[in-house]
Image (cartoon, rainbow, N blue to C red; front, top):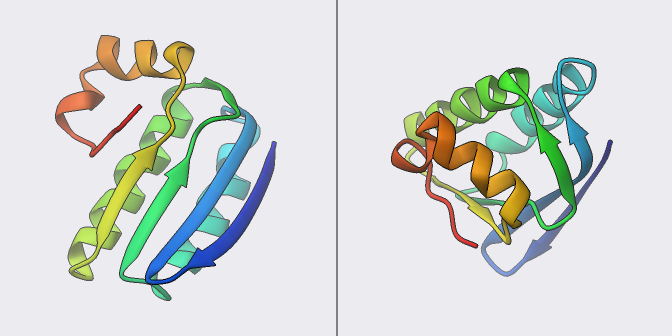
Length: 100
């Protein structure tokens, strides 16, 4: 997994590439938790995310709650069809703000 961060105006964009699973979730969680307190609008670019497991989903729910607690916005963007299918099957389209 590769994680990068950029800032465009008021938006902080974090891009996750590769697999978001039990092996990489701790790294992603640590990175995202550091970013949460530094921005009002956090966008997670999923265009190059190839797989997400239940461990990755747990991290996203945790980050979503932390951003919400801070009064911010958390949105998943550029979600590809493979990852979107996982969100649909698990019902996460009802929990997270997701756009294709």
